[in-house]
Amino acid sequence: MIWGIFAAMALGGLTIALLPIRRAGASLIQRADAVPAVLVDQLEEVDRDMARGLVSAPEADAARREIRRRMAQVLRCTDQQSVATSGGRGALILAAVFVPVMAFGYYAVAGAPDVPAAAFADRADDRADARRIAELAGQLRDKLMAEPDGGPTEGWMMLGQTYARMGQFDEAVEAFRTASARDDAESATWSMLAEAMIRANDGTVTPDAVSALDRALTLDPLNPAAAFYLAIADAQAGDTAAAHDRLTARLAETPGYQPWMDTYIAQANAFGETLGRAALAARAPVAPGPSAADVAAAQAMSDGDRAAFIRSMVDRLATRLQDEPDDVGGWLRLANAFGVLHEMGKAREAYLRADALLPEGDPRKADVRASIAGLDKP
Image 1: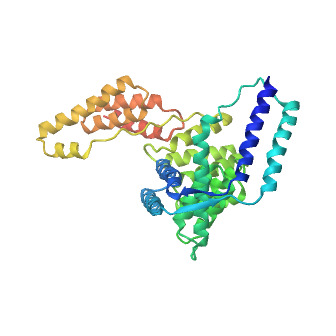
Image 2: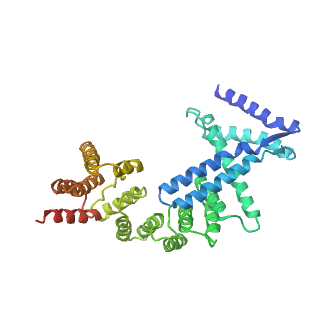
Image 3: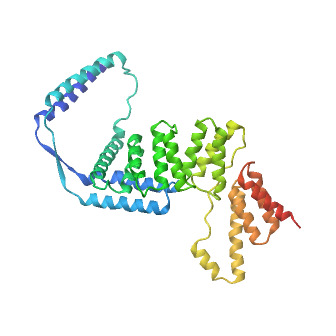
């Protein structure tokens, strides 16, 4: 039964494969139809890179402007291309006959008719998007290489990010390497080059990647991606203690919360478990402060109304912490707020709650204990 089905499928496929040989003509492709996928993807990638702290706000704005400019430029181009099919008929006939025969032979030996088929049709949109992205990436690369001055650095950066998202890390390395050779190359350019090298080598931090990371830190000592991958390089070289120290030192340099800290803390705790060191506590995102409207309203208040307004904000924070008692950042903000209100007993209690949540080795613990000691002085 199943072989009959396979035979019918093969016959249908053979017919479809041979039909183009009898046809002469062309189909029209609208270039504008293929535009949005890669450029919208690149806009989202810029937002994610800025959230991870890999690029600054001015860099992100510049990248967005360039992406939108290219999007508008290509969307204005509505010319049509004629794609003709010609030649290679002998090869097509051979392939149309040879492939089904070989498939039947292989399946008869190694096939598994009882295995459920994958939902291939369900992934048609993903495959189409991938093809459009690959085509547009190739067009962008050709255009950059054709320009007398080698094209703008931003174009090579976008090309490198696109290749990286596609998993074509060797091509991403070449694009980022071109961008890093420019005089306007920034720290993020070098760290992205290093990351592409690492991904191209299955996670191994090669000497070339280390050189790129060192250059990134020279341009920006606070580049979090560069410090992170150098810590990975330390661990791969067998110096897990140095890797842990590098991550914790970088965390200590930055107060408050940044999105990249989650990755740092998770990796530092993995190293710390191997070394038998205390785990670092996760840092919670800082709750938003008063809005500009709140500040303006407070400035227009009388002293009594302003005190009541501040009190209401502090009370809301204290109420929230009753439901979220593990929020270290919240207790620290509450302690500071009580200190501003000169309610030292409540400030001390909030600091004690924070101290109990902070593990040994967390750089904030020393500051909290110093504050408690200051409050204990007569």
